[in-house]
Length: 168
Image (cartoon, rainbow, N blue to C red; front, side, top):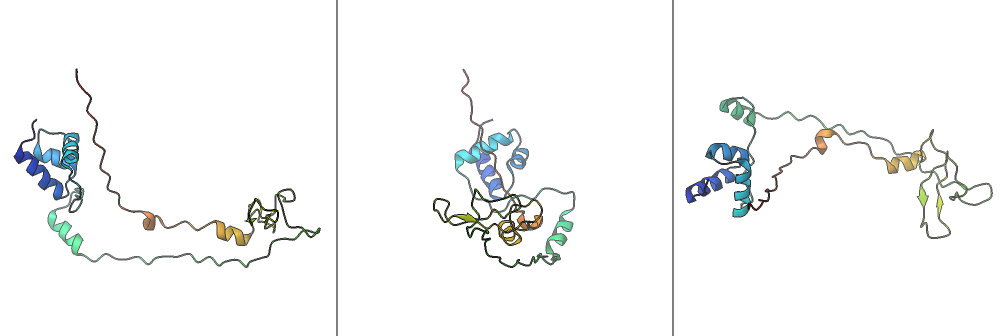
């Protein structure tokens, strides 16, 4: 199939309307999705007005009603975890701070200072059963998970054009 001037103009129009490469290929006929993607790439077409919405089986009048209806907002639920009270790093019976050689399994392993310096040490406070950090440092280290809806962002992905192999 050859790309005539009329077909190129139709491609540009449909692309600007936000149709996907597959939708354009179906409308034009006689051309594949990958051919559309390749031509779009060679023409340097980029920005689109709006992406096409997938057909969901409803009539256009239903779509208009749904689009104009106000969307109910669910109130955001933020979990408020109170910050634990700060406890100063542990000083051992010998008067020293907790170091790599003196730390035990049930001690907080939160590093304090520069590891390259002699005064480097760990928090050393007691931890909750099998945890690495005391309550204060665990609060700093671990953030509560965000709600799925808040993290989800719409993605627009356009497949990279396929390279053609030379035919002998």
